[in-house]
Amino acid sequence: MNKHDPIARPGSTSSTLRLHTNQTLAIPLPRNAHLVATEGAVQLSFLDPTLDWLGEAVPVTRLKLHEGDSYVMERSCCVTVSGESSAVASVNIQIATAVPVVKWFRTWFARRTLLSRAGAALRKAR
Figure 1: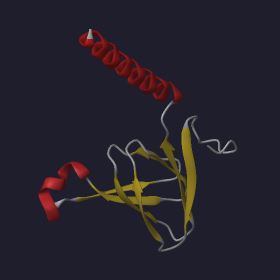
Figure 2: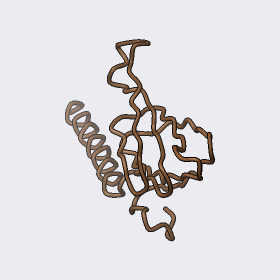
Figure 3: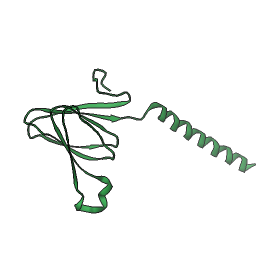
Figure 4: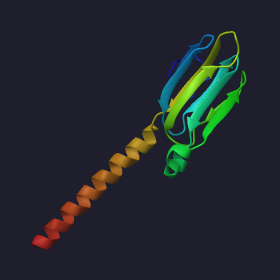
């Protein structure tokens, strides 16, 4: 997380993209990625992954974010980001990382599971 970035949230990785006129960038984004238009207007285009069963008939979702608008990705997908205006546009992308408490709980649960399996195996051997 960039400490000087006023938009960044704790426990996230943040980066800012600057797009010039007619510039387009395709990036894969994970679920719950937070996009904020910080300068100018930005257009997002992506295929809805929940409609993959439609094959090539999947409609393209297009969103226009004006300066200050934000959007949170509901599913992991590849997103095309492009500047809408003739001037420079920028978008801030925040990708949430696992919270330390969640990591601690997963480790604790895995250890408890292993200990209970080992204890069951010892009781069975008696």
